[in-house]
Image (cartoon, rainbow, N blue to C red; front, side, top):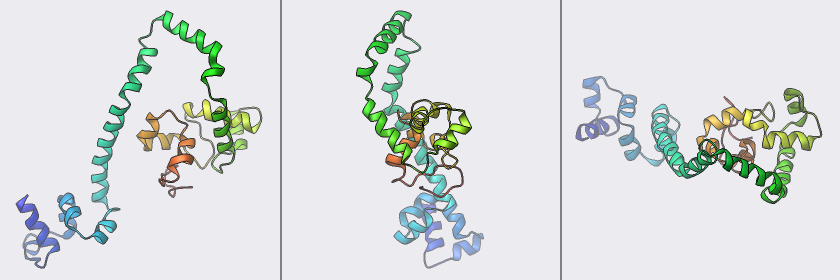
Length: 205
């Protein structure tokens, strides 16, 4: 670490002698010691440096750690889902199916579904005509929106040409792990967080 600090001071301090002797540039120091650079550089420089390639690699490491935290946080949910599915007995599945079939109206919040259908239809990221034609879904705009809300996104259907379901869930692991339609997530949370909605597009909508 001491040698690292020497190189840092040589790169960004008053003297550039060490760099000249060793033919090293500031960019080399940033790449070799990003943590030291971020820690020591000025606030304005940190802001400019945030979008650089070195910070991108640092953020990848942070993102990987974040993904682990998400996985651990959802482990109980995954365990319960596995127990209800893969490791449940036929009797347990049959009983659950029977009760769900008869009490579905009590277990599903239809008003919440209707609210999200309206949210989709009021968004310029859901195109009912485009979706109807692309995925051969018949019915009113409400029926088409409900299909994407509850079924279509599971097959990575896109709600329009302007939003990529597959890109959004692969880009953001917290969305993939959450029990929510990707476009609804974007409209409620992702839009405020300036998340990308398709490859090589401007952030936001």
